[in-house]
Image (tube, rainbow, N blue to C red; front, top):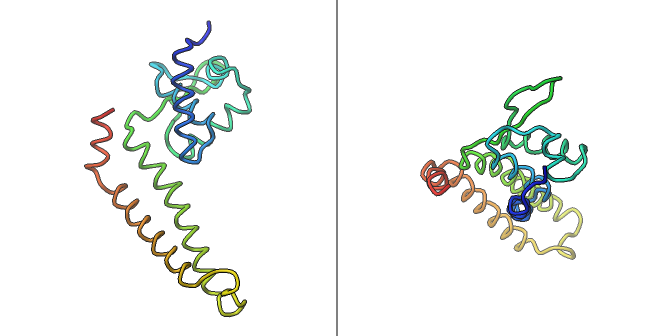
Length: 164
């Protein structure tokens, strides 16, 4: 049975959107198929729906599981694993923000700290303005505080779930 073109189109658009968060488009497209499905889906189901390889599906499932946006729902015949999306969209967003975005901000801050630590030793003023590196750190600190407040705010997550 062919996947309805309207479903394919919607899932592709979700994939495009998810790509802006730093994921691969296929990750977002697979998540959308799993999320929108009434029943848990297997890797084979996803391969058939999307016309992609088992390797692509497996890599995406691993990524989505790592970020806690899908989970194993059941085991079928011959050990086939079926996947379901976490239905709490606020929790899905929170997991991604905590695991991915905060980690990126922390790495950026640490790199700026390392640059400042070597500033006088390697004559860095030729390469980077110390004041601008410090301003960049302030920006990252502000972003970390903003992100932490979003992730810890139940009211924001409740709004997301209510709108969904």
